[in-house]
Image (cartoon, rainbow, N blue to C red):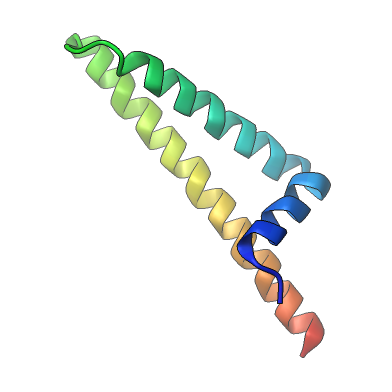
Length: 79
């Protein structure tokens, strides 16, 4: 059975959707870190922060689902 890291590497090299989602997740993380450099956020920045966090979490959840799907298919193939 493959580890999560091995599955991620496989998906990264074979699945364009996974790759795009991962790149988008990293971009959002960089945006969030840049925003958080401000010690005090305006109400608009707070809304933007929440939006970025929500979108980032959604992408992370989708990537986790893709890893689970891959693992399930792998297990069924070896059963």
